[in-house]
Amino acid sequence: WNAKARVYFKMNLIIFDDVASSIFKLRMYPYFDIANYILMSISVKEDTPQSGSVSFSRRHPFSCWLATMLMCFGGAILSSFITGSPLFECFDDTVSILTATIVWYLINYFPFDLIYRFCKILPVRLLVCSLKEVQRAKKISIGIHHGLHLFPKSPVMCVLLGLLKGAGYCEMKLIQRLVRGVWLPASNEFLHPTFTTKISLLAAIVYYWHHLDLIPLPENQL
Image 1 (cartoon, helix red, strand yellow):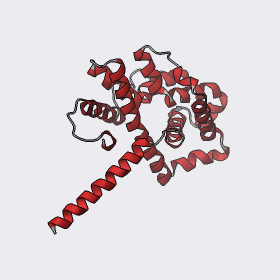
Image 2 (image 1 turned 45 degrees about the vertical axis):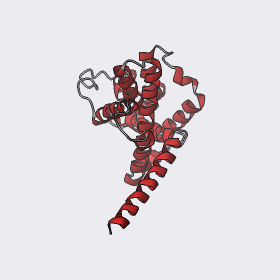
Image 3 (image 1 turned 30 degrees about the vertical axis):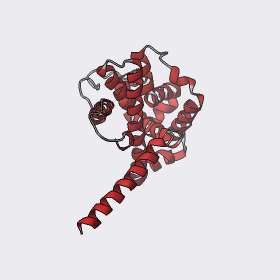
Image 4 (image 1 turned 135 degrees about the vertical axis):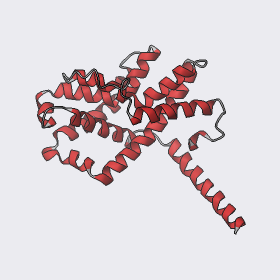
């Protein structure tokens, strides 16, 4: 029985490693990025204080679009800010901007809000959120590697870049609300960090520890 259990355990480890390696090698575009754009578009739509956010998006389409783009690319914008890179360098990726714009348009302007309502169905939302979390882990890893390249002797900068890559949109909420004419200074991530920010910070620390060889696991299994 013990021998069978060991064989079964080893087989599960092999399967887990294969799945982890496959996910680790996946490109983020289009599926994972689209999941991010869907969630960010819904977040801005539902954050509009007026009853019926559709009316706001129709009266102020540019403000609604810009707020959504700031959320979609918040991590890249804030990372560029703290590294001294061009602030809106991410907007050079025309394909990503067009894709995010199409998703924003469908969420806000599709007849009878059918796309928005479809994305709110529990199984669909679970799928979209799962894809988003895979993307988040990948972006945190990318942020840590970027930090190690630019600031090899600064653990704070490395972890901060990982955090911003993974949850930069949370810190961007205050700015996107200003774009929509909403000023809520007491509601920000520095005063009231969300669970997403906390778990992204923890993940960034774990990835950095892995770089220091303090965690004996392959990166794809993290």
